[in-house]
Amino acid sequence: MTVREVQEEIIRLKKEKDVCILAHAYQDQSIFEVADYIGDSFGLSVQGRDAKNENIMMCGVRFMAETCKVLSPEKRVFLPNPIAGCPMAEQMSLEDLKELKKQYPDHAVVCYINTTSELKTECDLCVTSSSAVRLVGGLKEDKILFIPDPNLGAFVASKMPEKEFVYYNGGCPRHIIISHDDVVKAKKAHPDALLLVHPECRPEVVKEADFVGATTAIMDYAKESDKKEFIIGTENSIVEHLQFDCPDKMFYPLSVKLSCMNMRVTTLYDIYNTLRGVGGEEITLDKDVIEGAARCINRMIEG
Image 1 (cartoon, helix red, strand yellow):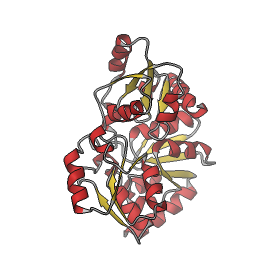
Image 2: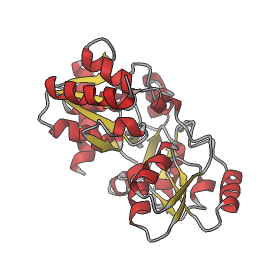
Image 3: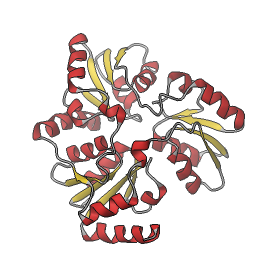
Image 4: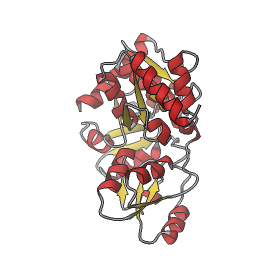
């Protein structure tokens, strides 16, 4: 089968089986073309919740599919490739968090959406990269334990010096590997380009950026800007997507190292086989995990 033939079968089967396909922004362009919704992880889970379909397929990684299940417990949620995980979400165990909470009992526990549902049951507030500054700034507590990404935590802390932050020593292995030297090389190669980066990058990288924001915010900024050249400091698939969206502009990866293997492991055939019932994994979560994670997430929604 050709790519187009597989896409046509996916489109036919998703209608036949009442499946809403969600594609994270880091997925391949060919997957974008069969998705019902494209975007960041939390926004997609809300789209899945609000969709009329009885079934959801999350083309992303496991914690994203779990979030879909938490927000839509009555629906069947599928992850097309079961090995698609998130190293940042999985680097911290529930025991690790409980130990940290003992060390900082007077701190509000704020978790990035990039955590497992199990971890969210022990947190006070969940945030996304786009909502973190606003939501943490609105907390009455002035002491914050931010998990698991110290880079996003440091970015939030820089906006509110009146609060005290402590962090878990984790982070996204793709974003955290980018250094100031990578920025210097990219700017030397493309001196007229603006640098757009994700707040999961190190502070030394964020400091050099012309714009800092979540993945969809980076894409929106590039589309709306009257500038013609951009260095993209997040997962390299965004370079490709922006080239399709803005053929009159030029986009350059900040580094070849910004390619997430976990995001790229999902293929069109994984989606096709899941729709056929011969692949993928249905996400199941214990009732207490769903309720505990929902409490944490709903506080974010209400905020």
